[in-house]
Amino acid sequence: MNIGAGSRRRGAARLLATAVLTTAACVTGQLAAGNGTVQAAVRPGFSDGGVPVGGASRAGTDLAETWSKASQALLKPLLAAAQDARGRPVDCRRAKCVALTFDDGPGLYTDALLRHLKAHRARATFFVVGQNVAAYPAILRRTVAAGHEIGGHTWSHADLTRLPAAAVRSEFARTDQAIKAVTGLVPRIIRPPYGALNASVRMQTTRPMVMWSVDTLDWLHRDSAKVTKKALKSVRPGSIVLFHDIHPTTVQAMPRILTTLSARGYTFVTVSQLFGGKPPRLVYSGASSLL
Ligand SMILES: [Zn+2]
Image (cartoon, rainbow, N blue to C red; front, side):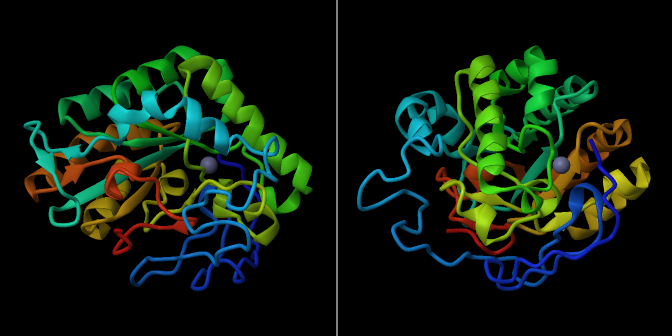
């Protein structure tokens, strides 16, 4: 699902104060390095937690209300405090936590990835494409059953900045419906394909948009050694690491990445766990943005 869109720049500076959006394929929109924290401006009428305030004017345009009411009980285990490999609770404000994220699945290599994660008692976050959820429902079900977090990554892996508002909402809604049909859950977080985001897209959902702070460029290199090297060199406590589980080279890299980071004392947590069991704020990319 890496869609080569050619190099182009996208302007999202209005929302992403430090964003530098460049290049193509699934990782366009790398956020600026540094502290990695990117906080969107708070929209009038919305709290900074992404929850509508002052009435339900957006009811029906987004499923945020749905997840907040119907899915919270089901999500409780996912939002429980992070645990280390021995099952002891971990406070990511003090311990070394890292959120590994896998985009564009589910796919043919996801089950192998689930086995690697299980071997290290690692939790991860999967930003799934709606079309692939429809194609591989059982794999998504197994992913949720294993305790991983699911985020939305649109229905067709579209560049949302090129779509009209109604089409953006449809991309979210179709994906939500597909995930809910399979798992009973509606994702609380979204990652826009290519990291492509602007003010119009941001207005179409109240849910957090999750970027990343470490880009392994796995889609580009398709080389396990390079992916491993990049991940091991770049991960810091609080990192959100971008991978794609549709590439076998990425999945093959995971045993060494997991083993090495474990030896360095890292706990592998979901994105929500990284933020203390709460979904993050409007837009963030990990690193030192722990709440
Ligand atoms: Zn993607």
